[in-house]
Image (cartoon, rainbow, N blue to C red):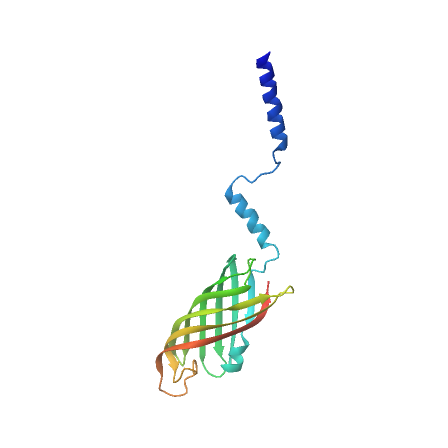
Length: 188
């Protein structure tokens, strides 16, 4: 009889535990990460298309940015630019660390980039480091600003302010120059 009562008590206890168990569970840590990524991605704008108006005002050129966020906090950026007054072009590719809470290019950022271009048929290349802030409004309008420093080598120009069009045959082969960033665009 005692054995019967022990078995009965075990059956009743296991029934109570089974009834208390959740009906859906995440099997692995990877499932949990996937579920969290799905929640974070809702409402995120992972692609930003921007224009850089300073380039048109200061450098008589056209420039823009394409930013893609493959994962939260890490953004990849490509920035082509071209002179409107002479045959000169440049482009840069880089990465940015973003502080935003979603998988989008918003919040404070810092990141390096590599630069390459041509001015009057001569090569221009270098590295840059930028920091700044950007916000994405609810309607997708995106505004950003920042500062940075760049090291350029090649057809830099005759002064620290002349990057691009060469006005004389004299050139500076290397230069460390400041960067001023401002962008306006739309995030998808």
